[in-house]
Length: 447
Image (cartoon, rainbow, N blue to C red; front, side, top):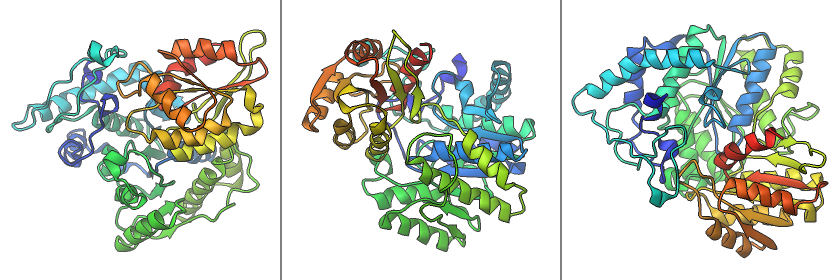
């Protein structure tokens, strides 16, 4: 684990890079070739999107598992343990299997790194000035050159493909990490490509318009491979349609209400749109000859679960109010969260614990969330250097019209303050980033 976490890891840098110099698909292809091309025999569903890709991937996988197929899912980031990134039929990889995969990949990774011209910048530990301690031995690299060295995400992607091939998976749902065009997962040749939605996020890396972001997401579209898209806005929808047409791909766009009548295991009205995309993918697979019954469709959608996606924890009498943990981190997902929690408690009884990354559109997120909460506690996550300082975040929420706004220096302090201020019949919501969800969810789940 020390070796793996010591690789260049762009999930744990202050500023995410996104260019051909640092994100090299040729490097990823070379790694897979050295491993015997484990992806070659896999039947892959490749899922990209600004929001909804995790939920949609979970629904697709749950239906495929319900149909009797051994189904692997590769997702990122993880909440508590890296094993969560590699699941088969909902069960994470074991620690022993994970160690075995790293040991198998390490010689190939080091051989690539030893080739002339493949030198990389060393990852530097977090400094005291950043106010961050390295988590689990992880390095917080500044966004320098990875050179020809496989990155952390390259390696974990290769591990996933090798694991699923070794375990004889009948289907693999591969979730894009960032963007699409330059993502490590984009070396695969899928049976269907999926783009769930397009909204403004990671604009520094992907572009400042919906059209530019759509172009990066559409980079996963492969010649002749059918595409399922849930994108509704005209500009990005046009980009995806044009790319599909240019690459000779059939484009499938499920209509609104396509998932009506299905019971969904994932909470929130916005999940209907994700379920529609998932059902359209299943329909496409059935058209390709996959035997998937109507019952498997129903049972899978009802069984699908995903941590930190409007995940509700009931109140603990005498200890704490009900809690919702969500990874909403842009204006669209924040608006979906606000709508989902509206019926769960009275406005005055709702408390938001918020922490947001610096590369996000803070005013847009605050405008979406502020009206839905009687009080806001601005904090920061501590295991990643990208957090906005609490005082700055609090000011953004005040400017967005939030009434009662407080600050807390760390998640533990925010949690204590929320419990002191929220009525026992009220609701505490933790949101703003996957990182704050990861740091507080174990506290909530533990009671």
